[in-house]
Each structure stands twice: as C-alpha cells, then as structure tokens.
Length: 141
Image 1 (tube, helix red, strand yellow):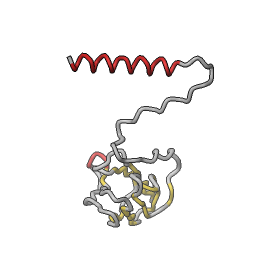
Image 2 (cartoon, helix red, strand yellow):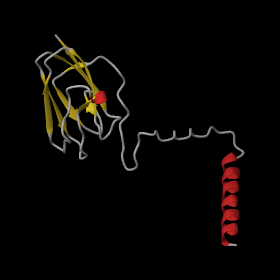
Image 3 (cartoon, one colour):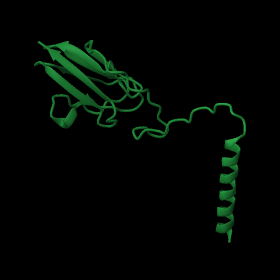
Image 4 (cartoon, one colour):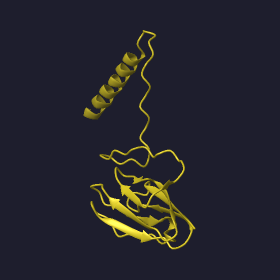
C-alpha cells in the first residue's frame, strides 16, 4: 500500500511540474543546461579543451586543472622537455598507445618528469589516470 501511495504521489508531482512549466506567458524560456559528458566525474570541474591551433615552441609543460599546458608544443631534436604537476591529483605522462618513449611514474603535486627528444617526429601522449588529458610534442630537426 505504501508503494502505491508513493507512486501516485510521484506521478502527481510530475504532472504538477509539467503544468507549471508550461505557463501561459509567451516569454522565452532559458535554454536547458547541456547533459554532462561521459568524461566528467562527480566533484571534478574541468576546463573545456583548448581549441586546436599551431603548436607552441616551448620546453616546459604545466599539468594544471586536469590539462597539459600548452597542450601541443614544438621543440628541436636534442631538447629536454619538462612536465610539472601543479594539480592536487596525481597524473602521468605516457606515450599514446604505449608505443612511444614517454613513460613517467605517477607524478604527485610538485613532481617533475623530463625527457630528452633525440629524434624528429610527432609524439602524442596522455595521462593514463585521466585519459581525456592529451598533448603532443612535435620534434623538428
């Protein structure tokens, strides 16, 4: 009997909410908030991924707010790139598909990872803990 009353009460609230939302005025209603994407986690705010653009010439990458910044960099052969974790959460710097040279340990806040690029190419990487975090190092001769 309690379940039946609960279902009836729930249905009544749903109907009242629908009627109230319809209204009779012709004013524009605010747009609905978009649904959360599959990569969001409760309690974690994430900045949207930056728009793709030309790679920045740099030899340092900050890990901050669940993103690599700059996300894409260009360096010359022989350059050592340093990643620094400025987040409270741990991260890694790992070659995509596991077939590249980048293989950091888990970086805690303040930890650094360095890698010297000895050949030209394009090296995609990610954080294995948060795979939506990606970056690219383009190494030129």
